[in-house]
Image 1: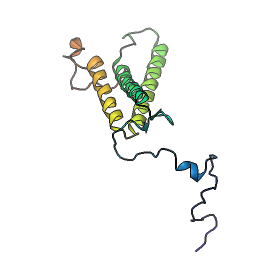
Image 2 (image 1 turned 135 degrees about the horizontal axis):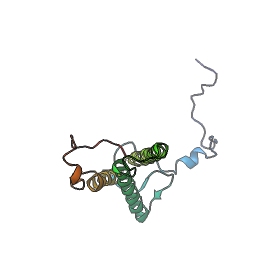
Image 3 (image 1 turned 135 degrees about the vertical axis):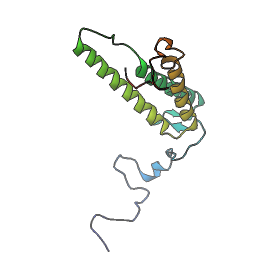
Image 4 (image 1 turned 120 degrees about the horizontal axis):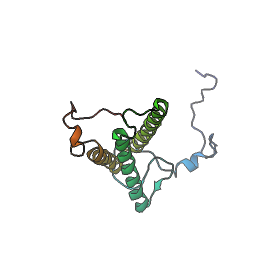
Length: 156
C-alpha cells in the first residue's frame, strides 16, 4: 500500500534535514539519555552546555543547586508586609514573585530531565537546603506554634 506522503524508506546519508544538518552530522552529536546515568558528559538546560569539561559540569551543578535554593526562598519569602496600603502594588509584586518562582522551578525540572544523577542529587539537595534555611521550624520559631502541618503552603 503506497500512500502519498508516507515514504518509509530511510533518507540517504547525504540528504539534508530541515535544520540544515545532514544525517552524517547527526551521528557525531551527543544522544540524549532516557535513563539515569552518572557522568560529566551531558547537556543540561542549553545545547552544548556544560559540554565535556569537568569544570563546566561542576559549574552546572552549582547553578542547578542555587536555582533550587532560589525556588525555596521565593516559596517562603515574606516581602509583602501584612496590611500594606497599596493592594494593587502588593498584588502585582505577588504575581511577579509567583511567576519568578514557577519559572525557576521549571528550569530545575528541565535540568533534572537531563537524567544525570549528579543534577538530580544537587536539585534535591538545593531544595532541602533552601527549605532548611527559609521554611523549616528551625528558622521560623515564632511561627512554629501556628503551623498545622510539617510543610508550609507554597505562597509568598
